[in-house]
Image 1 (spheres, helix red, strand yellow):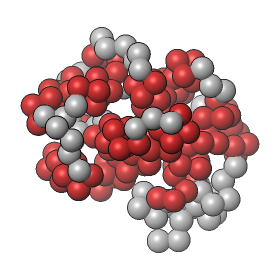
Image 2: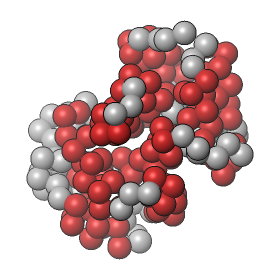
Image 3: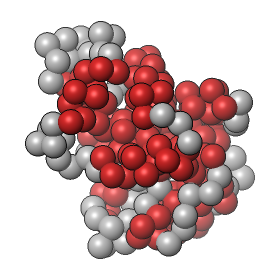
Image 4: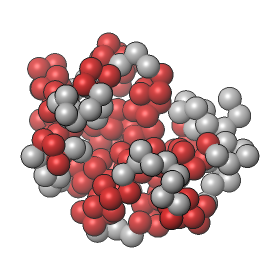
Length: 190
């Protein structure tokens, strides 16, 4: 059964009330849509996987409490496509045991943390915008281990390896993917 974007947003908001979680979901949705377009894949399917990848986060708030396994159960129970359920589980494969195999799963695994890192870099810029953000600025912050400590660079690097794409390419495409939604995710001149 295919759910619309509005139905998926409603489902997400039933389980996540905090705005920052919704903004992250929108960022990952935009990135997944972009990468689906780059790879010639199903944009709606990929976008839904990005939007819903943390459906259980506000309930579980940690892998120790069951994320992303609980999310996979929620999506399956609601009737989402098995591809979306697998992507949910695979984006936290170290905890779910479901290794990313498909291109969609590998991409979600890589860009989940990367969207957070790119957003964090934009937030410390004077413009607080993606419009003037360049890959070299992201790479500079990447080297600063004190910056955005909550973002796992190891997960991103593992995702880059799984995808078989250079980190710079992934960063560049993630910036490009997020630019059209920057105001929705709390960046730019709001």
